[in-house]
Every structure is written in C-alpha cells, then in structure tokens.
Image 1: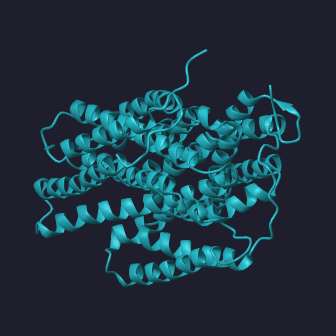
Image 2 (image 1 turned 60 degrees about the horizontal axis):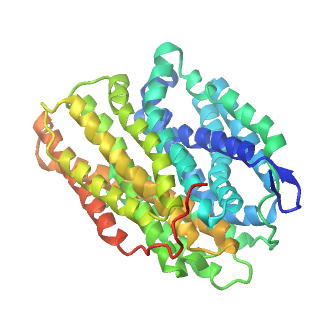
Length: 469
C-alpha cells in the first residue's frame, strides 16, 4: 500500500486501473465515429460537411479545455475532479446513445468532449504524481495503450458494431465501462496531487478559449477547403493573435492559469517537439491508409479496418517494451530507433501501387506503429522527467494542448497535400489518386526524418539503469 498526501493508505494498482479504463474510453471515443459517419448521414438526412462536426467538435473542445486543466489539478481535490469528469463523460455518452435528432447528438458529443478533455488533461498528471521518475516507464506502457491502441482500433470497432447492431451501439458500448469507472473511482480515487491554491484568471480563460477555438477550427477546415480560403485565414489569424496574447499574459501575471515555465527547460521542449511531430505523422497515416485501401484496393470500411488492426496490436505489444526501456535508462535509444522505423516504414508507403499486397501493407503499418510506440510515450515521459514535481500539472496540460494542435495541424497539412497533388494531375483516375497518396506519405516520411535527426539531442539519463529485484 502507498499513501496519499494526507497519509492515508490506498491501492495504487486499483487507482491505476480506474484511470486506465477512463482514459481508454475517452481516447477511443475520438475515433469511433470515423466509420459511423456515412450511417449517421443516412439516418439524420444530413450532408458530409454537417456530420463532420461530430468528429471536429470533440478535439476542438478538448483542446480548449487543456490550458485550464492545470489550474484544476492544482486547486481541486483529485477525487472530486476525476469523479466529476467521469460523470460528465457518462452523461454525454448517454445523450448520444438516446439522441433522436442530430442537434441532440451534437450536444451530447460536446458534453462528452468536456468530460473527455478533463479526463485526458488530468489523468497523466495523477499518474506522474503517484510514480517517481525511476518508475515512470510504467506510465509509458499504460498510456501507450490508451493513446496508441485506442484510436487505432476505434474505426474497426465502430464498423463492426454498426454491422451487427446500429449506430447507437457505437456510443452505448462505452456506457458500462464508464459506469464501472465512476463506481470504482468512488473507492479507488484519492487525493494524490498536492494542493497549490491560486486564483483563476478569468481573462486568461476567455482569451485562451477564443484563441484555441479559432485556431483549431481553422486547422480543421484547411484540409477540406484549402489553406488560402478566407475562413481558414480569418480563423487562423484570430486564433494566433489570441493564443499569443494568452501566452504573453501567462508570463506577466502572478498566478498564471497555465505556467509556461516548462518550455524554458530545453529537454522538455525538445521531447515535446518530437512527440508533436510523431503525432502529426501518426494522425496523417491513420487517416490516409483506410482511404487508400478503400479507393485503390476497393475494400469496404470494415475490411480496411481489419487490415490495419495488426498495426494496433503491434502498438499495444510494444507499449510494455517502451516502458521497460524508459525504466532501465534506454529511453533515448528507444526514441531514436523508433524514429528510424517510423521514417523507413512511411517512406516505403511512397512506393505502394494498385497491385501491392494488402498483407504487405498491413505489415508495413505494423512496423510504423512499432516506431510510433517507441517514440510517442517515451518522449512524453522524458519531457516530464525533465521537470520538477511542482510543474508536472502544467507540463502535462501544455503537452495535451500541443497534442491537439499537432493532431489538427498534421491532418490538415497531410490531407491538403494529398488533395492538391490529385487536383494538379487534372484527373481523378487511380493513378492520379495514387500520386496524391505518394506525396502525402513523402511529407510524412520527411517529418519522420526530422524526428530521427533531433532525437539525438535528447540527453542520456544521469542515473544508472535500475535492476530487477
């Protein structure tokens, strides 16, 4: 048994189990709708631009919530905060499950995103507070399952659920797990984050909300309407102005909502940059490959999802290995190796054709996911290990915020490159589409190469690798 900050004993294993189930559901929920969107368009008689809001609104709300989660973690009792987040997420999921109209479904999705954003922003802060720096490879293993495996299996699970039942089950399947999380949380959750009371700066809340909403919305539009569309430019400029204003204000006020001091630590900023670029590559490839399999190989959504499931399993299997490397002082070596695998595998995708074996594509994707597993979570762990405990909540909030921006940016840039190249071919033949995919994969490979090069700047840990008892 370990003790909370009040000296009361609690079961760390039970607490971690609750946190893991909660965040797995929150992250899985972000990609469950990818396969369900055509069905929802038919059910509610809406177009693609309208149904897209169900997928767009979730990361939008999550991104807006990130800056304030650091203040929440420092000022609100951990148990109260997490139970509130689980409760909101459950209510949102229930609303989506019983929705009789698209408007009600969208409202439920927003409520889901509020709860999910709180869960994502605070869970890692809790985990990094209950494990010391020598044990944080364990966090790498656990969070790798949530941030790697969950989004990878989302589209496949969604397609299967719709095939055997209805779209309501896409949301309803989460309800039992969310209820279990809430009930177990009432027992397992303890106050494990030291209280650092501060007054909430409402000007920062308003400025950050406007800034990140505009920026993320502009990025979400860029992939479909182009980077030079007036709406993208307008929202982008407004977003950047308000985000810069928010960041400047945090450096000037006595009690910042989000402390930006972690960015003064080079190893934190470097590792966070590596993680952000890896997220861009992962998001772009996860979006492109199902489209490639359906457009070029004419697979069904279900078939394309099943083709890529081996990659999800590979990522899940690699998460414990990533944790082992971190715990034994080899995180830097793992990140460099993973960046190399990431770069090579995506580069191979630039050579695929209409006759490339689907099995070969699945194997290449598995190698890519192994690389992602060796880079993403270890990079986060290295970043947090570079900070003092007092800055962990703010470092995690900044990391979650950067993840949302990197996800939106990566998807928009990579998709816009694909679409631009296809249009430049003056046709929509399979060859034209394939050329667009090759260009997008080439950009992803270049980003992977950047990760590989800068990963060598990560410092080796000063401590000796720990030994097994």
